[in-house]
Length: 388
Length: 142
Image (cartoon, rainbow over all chains, first blue to last red; front, side):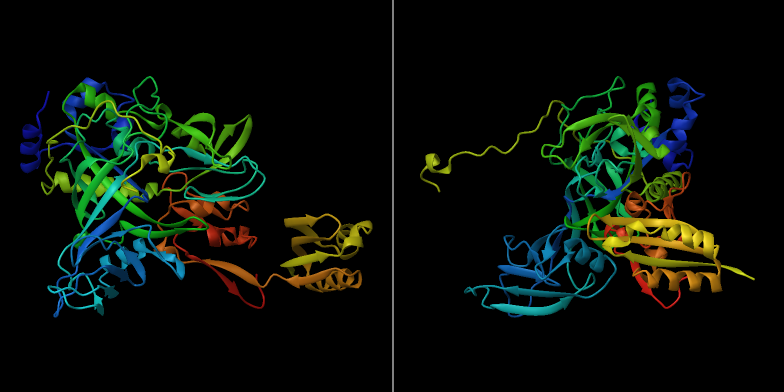
């Protein structure tokens, strides 16, 4: 048994033994969980994929005379106007109405890169905020705060997408060719954060993480956080289950780890790099982080059919081999998230911890244990009366 | 004489199916044919992307022969370019590349682009979420 305090003392003294989740998966082929727990202090995990539920809070500062911004555009992309006078939330998937391949994620990437962005805002004019219109240029130096706050990132596992129909489907899982001619998958497998701590023993509210090139935090279970999905015999969910809400200072981020994306006939999204260190508190945690791609399974879903029926279940080892079998036929596989970037993040985090630059933060509160999802029910609005 | 490789897009009219055109290219003009892409719309027309290998003089004569038989022949005058330095190696393009030109390295998981295998199907242009592929038009695509 090791405590967070003991591990952090080792990190401060430059004595911590840190390995990546891929390295520990290889170690586990010759070492027991007890031996790994004895030897290893921290395992770094990482992912770099498109995460649509992302965005940024921005405070522009007040102009003279002041304006209460009630309609806001950043490079033409709509940003949320319902937050005080000069605060906004810019969603990654918001799009420019006349140029739908440019959206909130692109504005975020431009801001991170220090580029100038055109801010245009309108207000009705009030006694305390008399101005009705402003058009100016902002950048990351000119504005007060910009911090990324992503309600749902780092999905614990994700489905494999195929298309059994006779027409091409354009999805957030990439271009799905007809008649099961390709299959796409989007998780870094044995390197993925929440697959290495499937029951959230160490990842919770307050966990310090790598996000977009800087240090950030887990602030809440992410939206659609679901612990009720079917699990395999190792307790690992076999489809998308847990998620994280995360935060980080966007002024310190780098476009090496935050990239805007546009998916044909789908829309704008954003690639986000997240790395999470997992403390090896005991043999149980060592056993959790030791999982390899042959032990992690996920569901193959037909994205061409309404309701996305499940067509099978495969391991990440099979997905990485280049082909899987679906309905008895061989289907070519391809990733849609960057494993090479995820590996880079896991290595950076490893170096930061080894150098004493990154200490582990014990969660101030663990996530709820029994959660499931509601679907949106369609109710007769007339029967609800009054308020509507 | 030197052997050359040339790529042509052939458009067949509806009634060309009764002539053994490819056989004649091989037999009479000593051209090796590699079919890179084929599309047939029944009753209307067929399109073929061919790589022809042989002597330049024979390829020229073979193309003339095809034209005499109402087959439209145009040299493939475009290639696909990739801004590799901006690539994040996500793999989206490799999902649609059936020619095997865009593949993920099985160990580094970085994108590899083998231009010699590219048949300019253009699926990667729309599949890349970072819009890093472009069509490069030029006179003589090798």
